[in-house]
Image 1 (cartoon, rainbow, N blue to C red):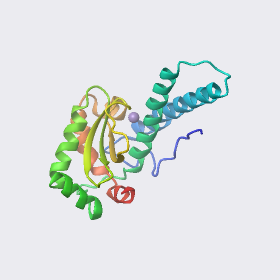
Image 2 (cartoon, rainbow, N blue to C red):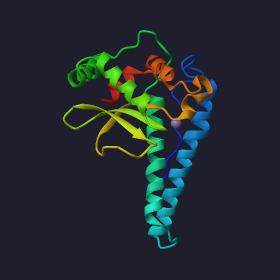
Image 3 (cartoon, rainbow, N blue to C red):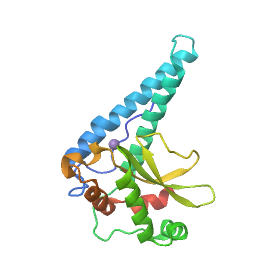
Image 4 (tube, rainbow, N blue to C red):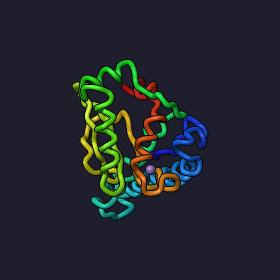
Length: 193
Ligand code: MN
C-alpha cells in the first residue's frame, strides 16, 4: 500500500534556466518527499484502524490522505511532463487535435491555462484534464485537494506553490508561468493520452 518518491526522468539542472537546480532539488527531495511521507503515515494509521489497533479521527486522517496523496500524484505528473527548455515548444499529434477541438486553438488554450495558473488563490495548481468523452477542461486546484473533479484524467500540471518558483522568481509568478511553457514535454503528454 505504501507509495514511493519517484526518480526524476532528468538531472536536477536539466530545466535551467527556466527552473533552477536549487529549486528542483528542494522541491523533489524535501517537498515531494514530505507528501510521500504524509501519505504513507495516513495509510499506516488507516491500516492500524482497520485491524482495531488504533483509534483515529477518520475524517481528519482521510483529509490528510487526500492532501498528501494528491500532492504525491500531482508532483509525479509534474516531473514527468517536463524536459529541457526549447524556445519554440508546441504540441503536435493527437494532443494538439484535442486541444484545438476543446479550446479552438493552442494559443487560446495557453491563454486560459496560464490565466488559471496565475490566478490560483494562494497556493495550488493549474491542470489540463480529459473527461471520458475526450473533452478537455482546464481546472484550478487550491492547495492539493479542492475543486477537483473526480474521474477526470490529468494530462498537464503546473505547480504554483511558492516553493516551485520563489527562490528564482520571487513574487513574479507570472514570469515563472510564461517561461514554464518552454519545458513542457509534449511527447510525454501525447503518450499519457
Ligand atoms: Mn510542489
